[in-house]
Amino acid sequence: MKTVIFTLLIFLASLASFANENQLAKVSGGSLRPFWLEPAKGYKLKKPKNVKVKSFESMKYQVTNKDFIEFLKAKPEWQKSQISKLFADESYLSHFKNDLEIKNKSSLDSPVIYVSWFTASAYCEWKGLRLPTTNEWEYMALANETKKDAGEDPKYFKRILDWYSAPMNESEVPNVGSIYQNVYGIYDLHGLVWEWVEDFNSNLVTGESRADSSFNKDLFCGAGNLAAGNKENYAAFMRFAFRSSLKGKSAIWNLGFRCVK
Amino acid sequence: MWKFLMMIVVATSLSCTQKEKKACCASGPEEVSHGHHGDHSGYDMTSMHQKPVTHSADSLYNVKTVWEDNNNKPVALSDFKNTPLLVTMTYTSCEYSCPLTLKKLEAIEKKIKIAKYKNYKIAVISFDTVRDTPERFRQYMKEKNLDPNRYVFLRSKDKSKIREIAVHLGINYKEESGNEFSHSNMITLLDKKGVIAQQINGIGGDPTDLINKLVQIK
Image 1 (cartoon, rainbow over the protein chains, first blue to last red):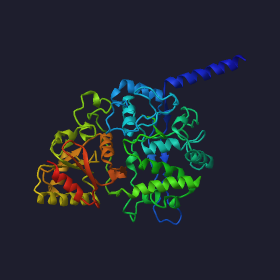
Image 2 (image 1 turned 90 degrees about the horizontal axis):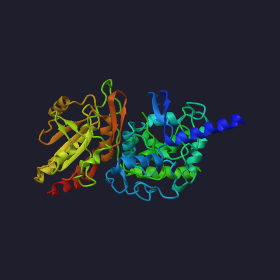
Image 3 (image 1 turned 120 degrees about the vertical axis):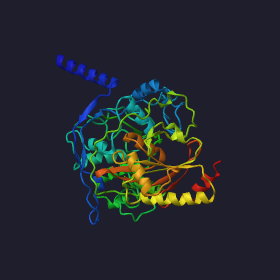
Image 4 (image 1 turned 45 degrees about the horizontal axis):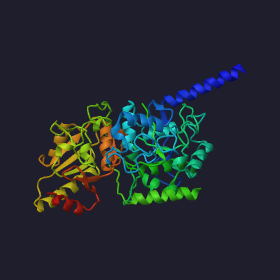
């Protein structure tokens, strides 16, 4: 019985500490296979080279509403009533009822949403951190509970696709830490809200010039999904397509962020 | 479920046909090591509003990054106050589409000259934190016969500042191996207050509206 109580206390203590502090987890570097760029069979496009990702540290949790309110108190120029429209569109912090309080149906421990790239970058800078690059994000998000590279695991993709296809709205965003913890100790890389990356605008999408030989054409435009190497890669295409549709001042309900070092 | 996913991708692909973005110089023969790291002498994004804001809210003069120009001088965008400014981003080692963007600028210059409009500048911001030094800029301007009274080339050693201005200008880019950059080509007209007045694709875009807007700026 004593052990049970003890375990329970430890559990509660760890819960409390997570509420106060968003610790960093170490992500050891390695090689990222850009499987989302692999052409389908029959396509005479070059297979992309592996990308090297250096070791870095990432926040275990997405930045919460509670965390973000601290930032707004310290840096009032980023409050809803004061922010320059250069840095965020009119949807900025739509789930706040005023400069420092969220609406009743939102939760303080949910990830902050309706934040622009500029605000997310400023938050990380304030913390002495930065936003992850696309490669860093994809690298850490490729891990599941047991493996660093779950890229071959059908269950890993099923979870992502189930999430992408499940309808949800802003008042139903769960608290951070409630989805899953991967092998690095990082929570909710899939299943909560999408995340800003530092170089979200690095996708080169070919538009008018559809004959362009760039592989990206096959990813984003027209029959992108048909050219996909395999259906599982689809989840990654979705993220790339989503990112390429964003602007720096976009503030939307299913997009938050975490910082890295 | 697949239907749902399809819908999103179709929607995204529709939106991407409205923009024109073109890869440039995706791979180059030159291997340059990344010896430099960005300094942090630029402005601090979190503290930038602490001084009273004197520019209009959507003015790019609010971006306080201090660049180094082709004459080794520190320059901020707000230094172009009261001067219409054409802005583009490229890098001087780029061999494929960047010269095309410059050609486009040349054509625009000619038409503006015909309209007898004089008081404007052209700023070229570089993606390349390593090779594009003020010396290199001067050499390039000489090679391409670019008027130093019209053109200003700008660089920063801080990659985050380059990313930031690209986001403001709606330019997508990616650093490839060997210090080459894939990037979209865009020419942006900033009015005398630093507000984006018009944007065109640097290669295929029709510059007529941009020129008309520029020459009407009093």
